[in-house]
Amino acid sequence: MALSRPVRGVIFDMDGVLLDTERFYTEVTQEIVGRFGRVFDWSIKAEMVGRPAIESARHLVAVLALPITPEQYLAEREARLHELLATAEPMPGAVELVRALHRRGVPSAVATSSSRDFFELKTRRHAAWFDLFDAIVVGDDPRVIRGKPAPDIFLVAAAELGIAPQDCLVVEDAPAGIVAARAAGMQSLAVPDPGMDQARLAAADLQVSSLADVPLEMLGLSCAPE
Image (cartoon, rainbow, N blue to C red; front, side):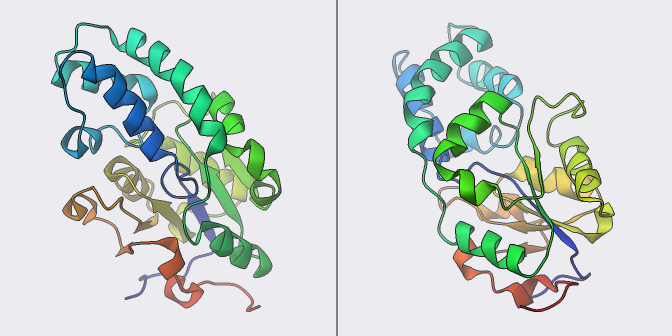
C-alpha cells in the first residue's frame, strides 16, 4: 500500500485527525436534538463533518426537521462546546507523526474548517506541538471563499507551504475533505472514525485506522531521511 507520487508536504485536517474533538460535537448535538425526540447518528453526521458550520447546521435542521433555525442550533452548540473543546486530547499517533515529519524537514500545515476562535480554544493546551506546523489555515480565513468539499482551504495551505498541490498529501477523516483534496489535485490519506461507513472514504488514495499505523515509508516522502 503506497501513494502513486512522492510527497513533499502534508496538510492535516484537525478535528478527528489531530485532535479527539468529534465526540464532543456528537455529544452536544445529541443533547440539542434529543430535546425534540430526535437521534443524531453517523448516517447524518457523515454528511456534516468537515464542512463549514453553517452548512452542516442547515443539513442537520433539514434532515431532522428541527423546530429551530440553523443559527439557533449553532448558538446553543457553541456555548456548550466552549466547555468541552479546551479539554481535547491528541488522536493516537498524531503527535508522533507530526514530530517525525518535522524532524525530516517535511513541511506540514493544518487546514481546518474551524474558526480562528475555535482553533485557538482547541489548541490552547497544545501550543508547543502546533508550533511545529509551517502553516495554519482556518475556516474563516478570508482567502477560503468556499468550504469543503471545495478545494479552497487546501489550495491556500499549499500556497502557504510553497508546494505545488500535486506534491501535497491531505490527511482527512471526512468524505467532504477527501473530495476537496481530490478537487485540489492532491493525494489523500483517510483516517475514518470507527463509526463511519469506510466506503464513504473509498476515494482516498490510502486509508488507515489510526495515524499510529502510518510509517513514513508509506508516504513516499521526497525529503532527506532522519
